Amino acid sequence: MFARYRKPEASPVSKAHAVPPLPDAATLPTAPKAAPEGMRPRKASAPARAEASDKELQRKRKLDQVKSELHKRLLENLNLAALETASEAELRTEISSIAAEALGEMNVVLNTEERATLTQDLYFEVMGLGPLEPLLKDDSINDILINGPHRIFIERAGKLQLSDVTFRDERHLLRIIDKIVSAVGRRVDESNPYVDARLADGSRFNAMVPPVAVDGSLVSIRKFKKEKLSVDDLVRFGAFSDEMAMYLEAAVATRLNVIVSGGTGSGKTTTLNALSSFIDNSERILTIEDTAELQLQQEHVGRMESRPANVEGKGAVTQRDCLKNALRMRPDRIIVGETRGEEVIDMLQAMNTGHDGSMTTIHANSARDAVSRLENMIAMAGIEMPLKAMRAQIGSAVNLIVQASRLQDGSRRMTSITEVTGMEGEIITLQEVFRYERTGIEPDGTILGHFTGTGLRSHYSDRFKRWGYDLPASIYEEVRS
Ligand SMILES: Nc1ncnc2c1ncn2[C@@H]1O[C@H](COP(=O)(O)OP(=O)(O)OP(=O)(O)O)[C@@H](O)[C@H]1O
Ligand SMILES: [Mg+2]
Image 1 (cartoon, rainbow, N blue to C red):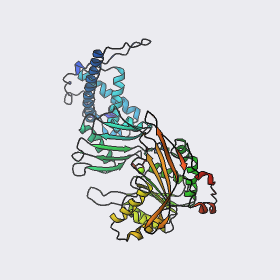
Image 2: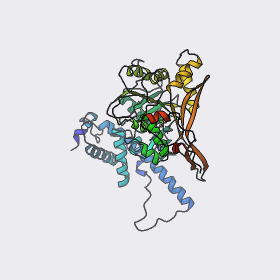
Image 3: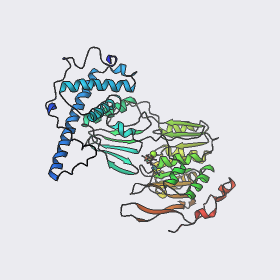
Image 4: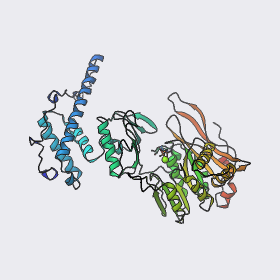
């Protein structure tokens, strides 16, 4: 009945392809029995518990072995070309039928729950990304970080934790990595040991394989969120205050050039995306990113994604190439996902020459640090410019630096909003208008604090007023706890 999805010449039961029963398959340790309904399970004594968990471990290992064998058989027996048109339900039924036959041959008895998990896992192996599938499907997980086949960390609600998902071994992990990167026409192996890619669902993916990755492949996945956090969400989550949101709205709407500064995973892209919601719908916006993550709500948006060189080292399109081209495409605003290299000079020039209201993010720990990072990037790009001229360029291009931070308790907050007010001699002058004031720490590690103005009125107040954003002076007041 399911012959459609099987290779015509190879039936799973044919002796030619039959795999001998697993050595100890018949002695698969029995699954621990659940207590009958209505009865509380008796507490086991310590040695009994140790024995039980040992048994469970043995059983899990054995199941993994069975799964690996079944997966091999499925690949041998499934007609992969026909699978393209199969529905999920058909395929699941087919997999469970092939698995049942093979289990019978291998003399392995499983309970209903184990059978269901096995079919599910096999389905993910054949059609998806194996053990990663449930993690990718779980919307409460932001990041997946893999340190070798047996240690997969996940980030949930700001907290990083070790998951109980594992790969069988490094080969299994490498196979999944290969599946991901080959789907986007890339390759990763000893000679190209690392790769950046975007998964079909938009998630950002980076992998580095041995021998450069010493203890097994390293993978990081930033899950793509369909529902981006809005300004309201961020205020609700305590990322910044209502007053700061009011200020930011005025800053973006009146076309200040904004840099979002922050460490890795501190919420820079999320902040940039939320800030973009203050841009008027009539403006033409061009976005440039290495991995397209931004999701702007405006009507008139052109998105660009840079491209690395192919395996022959050809065809690279850098962020700088995109940016240069963007300037010919008559944008009102340009948004660069993250400025990290030579594109810095074109970004600053764009900000200085009529593309007011442009925005980008930069990897830095404070507003002052962001300024020095910009200087370093200009120097690294090989642009010979006297320091004073370089600073004058930065000072007149950048109006506002917003600092995003991930605090030790996992919470993400806008820890500072700082204005660039001009130059004094060779120094770029900065004025902080809002900050996060830490006041203490709870025994469970939760950080206590609040947002406050610094008491200084915005340098751009007159501009805001002229554009119709007459912010009350009270928003800049210091808040005491
Ligand atoms: N205020 C917040 N509250 C809760 N989750 C947040 C908040 N800000 C960001 N996040 C989540 O944290 C993760 C990291 O955010 P984001 O991608 O914006 O960081 P990033 O600084 O751009 O990281 P990277 O340096 O890797 O580019 C995302 O999954 C995002 O949804
Ligand atoms: Mg980012």
